[in-house]
Image (tube, rainbow, N blue to C red):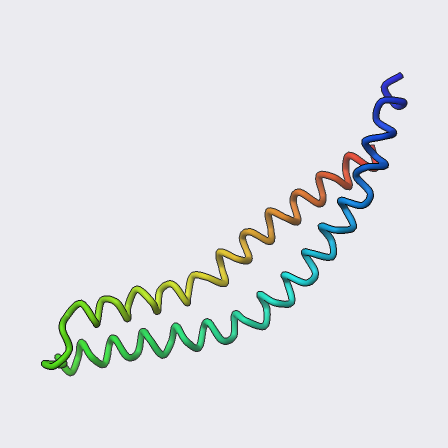
Length: 102
């Protein structure tokens, strides 16, 4: 009886697994390629803010240096956050596969 109830859910899970796998593949490629650019941007912003701090840029207000630090930290953390979210999609996909194979 329990197998009979699980059968429609297993059939419904098949396309969902396929969609999640395609989404994971495309997202992994996008995150892998864009993380190079975001890490370069983070380096530019952080080095620029350190240079402004060392030079004690008189024309630039201190808020500008802090803004560049925050932007640099954002660009440095964004790929890691996207990777963490992709790990959660992987966990969800594996959960569906486990349900399908049980």
